[in-house]
Structure formats: C-alpha cells, structure tokens
Amino acid sequence: MRYRKDELSALDKIYVATALLIKNKNYNDFNCSTIIASSGVSRSTFYSYFKNKDQVVMYICDDIFNKIFAQSLTKEKNHDFNKDKADNLKAMLVKSFQCFLDERDIVLSILNSNASNIFMSRLRKRLKPFILAMVNKKIIGNNPIPEEIKIHQYINGYTALLQYYLRHGYELSPEKITEYYFQFYK
Image (cartoon, rainbow, N blue to C red; front, side):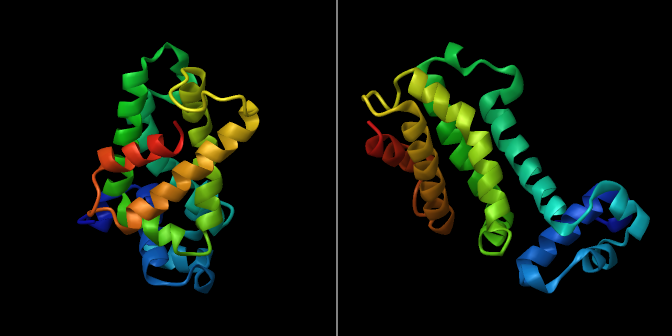
C-alpha cells in the first residue's frame, strides 16, 4: 500500500501494520506490542479499539468481507435474497470470487497463518445467508437431503474452491471457478 502513515487514521495504521506483520512473520511471533510499535499508534489508542491481536484479525476479515459481500449481496443484513433472480445470485457468486482475488495477498497471508481459523469461521457466517438463498431458489440443492446438511456442505465447498482459486487464481476466471461450484452442486 502506498499510504503515508500521517495520512492514515489510527484504525488504518493498525490494519496496515497487522496485515504486513501477518504477511511477513509467523502469526505466533508477534503480539499487540509489535502491532503497536509497527503502527505507530499509542498503546491506549490500540486498546481503545482492540483487546488482542485476534480482534485485529477479525476486523481485517470483516473489512474484507464487507467489501466483498456488500458489493455482492447488497448489505446482507438489510437484504432479502429470496427476492433475487437466479441469474443475479450466480452473478454475485462470480463477483465474490473476483473480489477475493482482488484481496488475494492479505487473504492468503491470513489463510497461511495461525489466524486461518478466524478467517474461515467468519467467512462461513457471512456465506450462510447467501448459500441459503441459492438453496431456497433451487439454484443448488434441489434434492431430498436435509437443509442443514446441504448448507454446511455448500459452504465447505465454497471455502475449498476459494482456497484453491486463491492459490491458482490467475489460471482460472471467476466465471470458471463459479461454474465448477455449480457443477459440484447441481
């Protein structure tokens, strides 16, 4: 990122510093003091926002997901996906893969660290309403398997494809990886 530290807010400084630390160090090899020193914010400022470094990672994940799903899902909390047409939901899936590719560096850094469980847990929660909408519209899951099992499997399938896609992202288009997803879950 090409930001001057004096132009960033305290939250931005913490975000950038933590992202760089995750990218360049083992997650267990740094702590809040390291983030504070790297970000240039005061200890009291840091702790006014976060209790620990896991909360910073949650903030980074949520920021990424807000960009991806707010664009794709028109602000999930205020949106009824059941009103969407099947083509729109498919297009949203394509767009989600493209957005993740745009955030590839930080996402892969988190996934390759000991913070990957934080990322995956939060991603699964964000995916659930979207996947549920596709099941309700019978875009996927038009079978007699209990809904809870289907949702769980479709979320796991998305996360597995996402990890593959991010590691091989420039070899496949977002449309192609989405096509693979739908081929798995016809």
